[in-house]
Amino acid sequence: MRHFLRAAVAAWSALSLAGCFLFPGAGATGGQSDAIHVGILTSRSGSNAASGEPQINGAQLALSHLNAAGGVAGRPLALDIVDDQSDPARAPAAARQLLDAGAVAIIGAMASSITKEAVLQAAKPAGCVVISPGSTSPDFSDPAKIDHGGYFFRTIPSDALQGKVLADRAIARGYRKLGIIHVDNPYGNGLAAVLKRTFEASAGRTTISARYAEEATPRTSYDAEIRPVLLENPDAIVLVAYTGEGSQILKDWISSNLSPTVPWLFSESLQSDAFVANVANAARLEGFTGTSPYSGGPDYDRFAQAYSETYKTAPPLYSANSYDAAILVALAMGRAGAATRQAVRDNLRAVAGGSGTPIRPGPDGIRSGLAELKAGRAVSYQGASGPLDFDDRGDVKSGTYRIWAIKGGRIEETAEILKP
Image 1 (cartoon, rainbow, N blue to C red):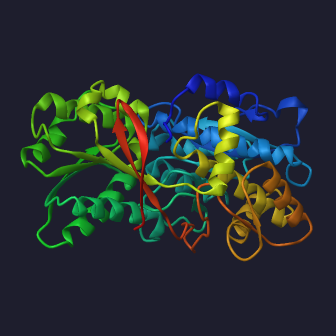
Image 2 (cartoon, rainbow, N blue to C red; image 1 turned 180 degrees about the vertical axis):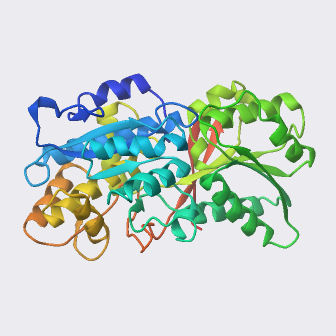
Image 3 (spheres, helix red, strand yellow; image 1 turned 135 degrees about the vertical axis):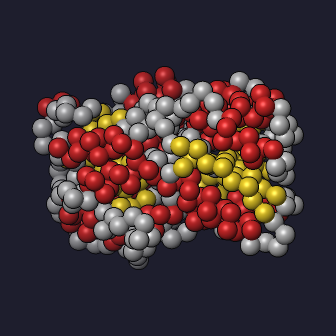
């Protein structure tokens, strides 16, 4: 059983112990002027701020393992971190700040809308890969919607899979009329479309949908958007939102007294204790469930042990995906024998899949992987977050999901594992 997005002070204190923690524009610590820069584009403020810490911590843990193994070609790696402020309009400038600092790759962003703008407006023109641990929109899989030109990868499954899991769960529970409330951006629109299509394909089932505008700072009310759904008395409601506005939407539902007993299902972006705490009415949320990509098995356990030892808390959602992204960037450079953006782009698939020597998460596994690459041998990194075999659009080819539930005011994972 794991809890999520807690113990922030302890985690950030531990972060400073891991080494090579750089802010944008700063020089390498300890006089390491030859450091290879890896960018982090993340939300440390605004509506999606709860996702920032797991992303940073996972990547920093990876760099501590890589640097303990000697770095890449004898050079240490360091992180530059820029806050996108949960604002897609800020994404191009934030990404350019990382590029100007010399980033060979950018890990991020978390929100699909921010990642889209960062890729199209900044990273792709600069020939730099963006590898996201949290952007799940199906739009990235369709070149007609997002033409990223091979400069986008992700270590988390597409919502083409999660939308089906949510729909299948709603059908299995016997729901006939499903409400869908979602943020109006590539993440919300993409997941909602898959959910609606899959649910309505089952005979006799209908959906009522409402969307709300994406904003960097949550509004004080979403009553106008959610009221039409509540008035239809749906059997259940699926909410696809970020933590900030998600909490307000639940507050608005409670105060409306409409559909007071309707059960809610949540997407992975709400798997945060902060979401529950901000609603400030845990009793009304008791038993509500959500879905999220599942990480488990020995490879995840190696990562989880290292994460817990470093940050004194269990790894939250997205932390393993961010760890994997950083490891893959380094292994790609190790395979190429060069610390360049082109080396990352051209070698990511080769180190993430195939029949090379299996490389496990953790210091020993990473050291072994870098040594194998230096000797000219093929490697296949076994992700902490799960299999990382990329297709031609930069998507991982498979995904497994776990059900989480709100119990006693906290988020807990259940034993229920689902495959699309």
